[in-house]
Image 1 (tube, rainbow, N blue to C red):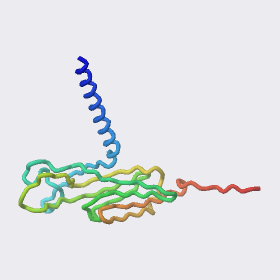
Image 2 (image 1 turned 90 degrees about the horizontal axis):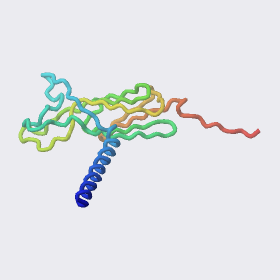
Image 3 (image 1 turned 60 degrees about the vertical axis):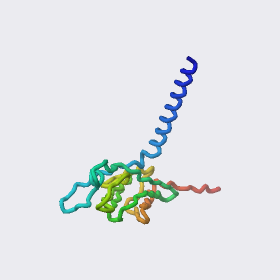
Image 4 (image 1 turned 30 degrees about the vertical axis):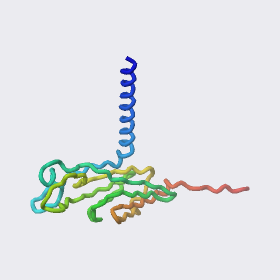
Length: 172
């Protein structure tokens, strides 16, 4: 009976450890996990979105992907870096709405070849949007964005009242 209790306790500990590991993964990746929705296909636009199934209909294409990002802050601005490989700058739309940065884009489906079939399909295609809450108000009119080597970099200057002000103490 002791052996059975030891086995039961071991399984419970393992289950708890797995659950805790998944909770940590979800906590760290939840903001980066982004849903890609297929664009509405137009008869004249054959590469608008990924097909619902692989090249030979063997398994579904991915609709979710991680768009990893960083939010950095210094005294004057926030800098957001978002990894969005495989896009052109005209495929991206950046907008600031009060205290939220919204990035939209579309990754178009490009088939490598007309022969053969996919064995692994992890790349997501379609349109996406990502909302990043900003800790303080920013000056939307002075926001600047650049895109290079698959990384979107957005600089958001802090609003004057959000920056704070250092007060010098005079000696009388």
